[in-house]
Image (cartoon, rainbow over all chains, first blue to last red; front, side, top):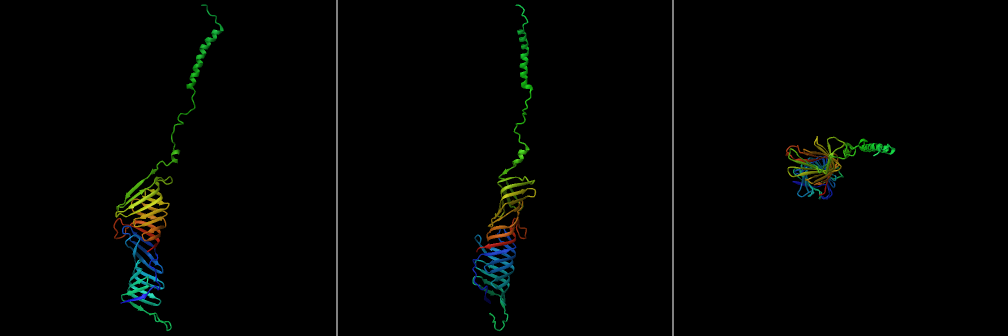
Length: 147
Length: 204
């Protein structure tokens, strides 16, 4: 069963420049893979994806990044929402972030956990799948919870 | 014939017959006896050590050095001019040096710098004055100075590195080029290690 939730609230243009900052970058001269290590932060527009290790997988053609594989405990922050997981694959061209491994999504006081979540940055929607559980904070009388 | 009276005239002549040859002999001897002060060795064109020190006598143009590392990569250094460094003993100064590291799998890294100092004893070349590093992986970087080994693949930048990578512009605190000693790496696997903070901007 899957749950679709709003994520990040506003639309994001996936053609914005992507900044990657880290402590170290190791480039293998023969294969050409690039491995960022040491508090890596990938930023695009409002979205920040931070992880201890990010591997860049290049696509065909010069200078095309196919996707970024962030591993070792990932935090995705966009707008006022945050999501955590063990691993995230950020496909820049498609503008999607696929998070896997005990995903925890917090929206205000509400929290959702699942095995997998795919965030579409352009539309600001997130699709959660795999044992989705929701934790709702009881609102006081006049507030009224969002769900 | 009557005996001549020993008149004064003939006496004078007989004395002159004696004096005049003596005077001639004296004149003749002045050619040899008076030493001229001209010192014949003074004007022989001999270059003294003072002249030689002024000019770099051991200048080599278009020098070329090449070595291969035990992993099969080849390092080739070429320069416009090279001469011994007047200040430092056993050190060579080269101008517009280019170093090419060609690896077994065909990829290569090229270094170029206007000024370089080579010290053969510890097989190291120090490039300075603005070094450009070009890797066949699509990296074109510049840094101020770089130290590279001549008989193995190892280079370390002196300071910050800036430039273009396959993924866009890149800036890092330091660059190190070395052979991967890590596990699962074939010998001859070379990696570029950017450390000290890395910033990359990628334009999708």
